Structures are given as structure tokens and as C-alpha cells.
Length: 277
Image 1 (spheres, rainbow, N blue to C red):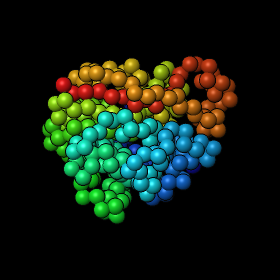
Image 2: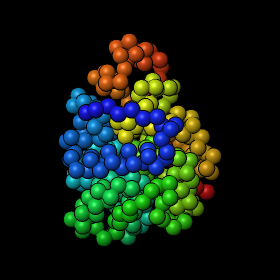
Image 3: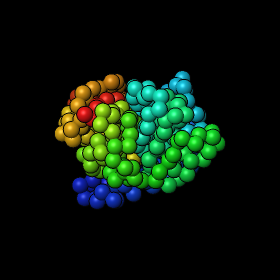
Image 4: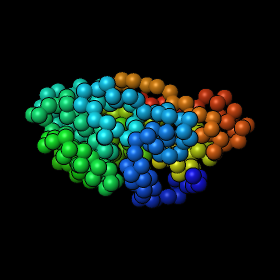
């Protein structure tokens, strides 16, 4: 694959979104095995990088293999404290994987709304829901910086490896606050950084779509959540993401790889919980 470079400071937010939309349109058409052999499904990584971010959903109740494109970096629905009858919103719903797990938890009396801005993903998710006969799972085409959802709709919001792809993370988190009911909460799995990535990785289009170079500092991420107004902010799970050398070699020289490993920079998947008062 040709390695494209980008300058995130020069690209507009719409151009960044189009980059992500284009890549994820390709992903939904290529199937799970090809996606699992890539970095967060981005196609940026070699076949040796199998599931370096994705966690195994197959043991969770409600799991449907047709909806699992191996795009996540955690299991937010496992930690989301979903109750029977809840209304749950999944941000960046993809083919519906987290929605169907959430639907098992909320039951027939609840409702699940999946939001995705890639038309091909929404089409795939709707087809999966129809095949399963789930009348209380709905998929909406929309931007999570401007959700097509009324205020105070959800009891719970979940998202899996998506906000790192959003140019305006504070706007997206503010939207989460808006759509949650008072007393509602979220559980979100995402990729964050501790330390700085080399510039060539920051500017790699494939690494942005692959959930790495769009990530921000962990402290900044948690700070945005607090600044928006959320309380009881808790890291429910954290794991380090190790990018294999053969992937790094597409962007860095041997010396640069060695320096990167010694730099102390860490790429982490975290699952964050927070409440709206």
C-alpha cells in the first residue's frame, strides 16, 4: 500500500473526516479477516499485526460475528453498567457489534441507537439488525460532533476506538453530555498517548485512520471530559498497544525505531467511565 502523508494542521476538519470515511468504507467491504490483520482495521499494518488493538468479543452475550469487523480497542459494553430498559447510544457503530451486545443487556424493553458517518457501515449494520429481527436497534447516519439525537435521550453512551478519529474531540464529548439524561453515564474505549509520536507517524494518513496518529495525550483526553462537566471519571481498563517493528519500518529508519522505543512514548487503549449529574 502506498504510504500517504498528511499535515493535520493544514488539513481542514472536513478533509480529515473524508479521509476516515473513505478508509472505513473500504473496510466494510473487505471483511473481518482482512480487517483483523490490520491496525484497528485501517489496513496500515502487516499480516503480522493481527489484532494488536482489538479485544475478543466472542464470549460476550449478544455477540454476532457478522457485525464484528475487528475495529475496536476495548470492550466498552462489558463495563457500561447497562440495565434492562435502558436507551443506549453507540458512537461509531460500524456494522453493529457493540449495539448488539448492548441490546442483549438492555433487553426488548430498551432501545439501542447506533450512529456512524460512513453510509456503507450504516447499510451493513441495518442489514445485520434486520437479519437478526431486532426492532429496537436503530442505526442513524450522522456525525458524532453533531449527533442526530435529541437532548437527554440516552441512559448510557458507549463507543469503541472512535473519538481518536474525530478532529474536534471536545465538541464530540460535549455532544455526549448533551444526549445523556441527567444521571446517565458513558463507557468509552479509545486510544491515547503518553509522550510524543515521531513526526512521520503523526503525518501518516494510514496511521491516522488506524487510530494511532489521531490520538491525543492521555491527560488532555481526561481533561476534556472533566472540562465538559462530567463527574466520577474513572479508567476502567488500560492496556499498552505495541506497534510491531515491521509496521514502524514503513515510517521510521532502524535508528528512529530504536530511538522511539527508548523515548518512553506509550500508546494506550483506555476504557473511561464518567457520569453526567
